[in-house]
Image (cartoon, rainbow, N blue to C red):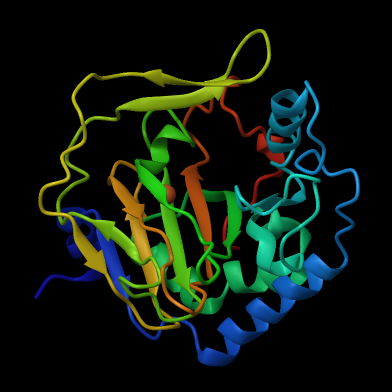
Length: 276
Ligand code: FE2
């Protein structure tokens, strides 16, 4: 039988059931709601429709690397700029430094089981570079197109690993992840980075389209952790069900890899922490 490391190396992902307890998941969901209630969205770049809309939205996104920032669903606002729903149920995600700035997210991200897992996966030089709380609410939770996480956390050599935690059951109906076993054995297709004159671009590194053949739904129970190789193409569909699919994800990179300063997400690299 393969151990966790061998399984991860051959599939490009690893599904670890009962990784977190139901209580640990509930505590994190409660904390996300608390953080949201303290967020005053008046003046948020998404609220105002101005000619600088895309620029201010870009800035808010680019400045979120060392903050706790709130991102709305695409259709959260009506024509007059008012939320169609309550604040919490209008959000798409919260990011990208929850793991460093909030004590509840910090201990979830650096739990005893995570320390054990990263040791088993030989990730002793891994540092957590970003975290995301993903809401995927009932009916409005949007699609996430097929992508490789290394496009968004580009390093030389490639070193990005994702840890995706199901805080609720994830099924085909509420928009679980999809991936292909062994799909990580392919080249990186694109690099999301800052443009010299402001804004961002998705630089194509290869013309070869990502094959969608063999993609399977990763339907998992609450408390499951899915480890994702940075080159593994994956996606999720819209949530058509009547219940949310809340998840939390962190990404690590190797502290010794080169992290270009044109990457969209910038942190003080000397301050990045691993799992110690
Ligand atoms: Fe991803």
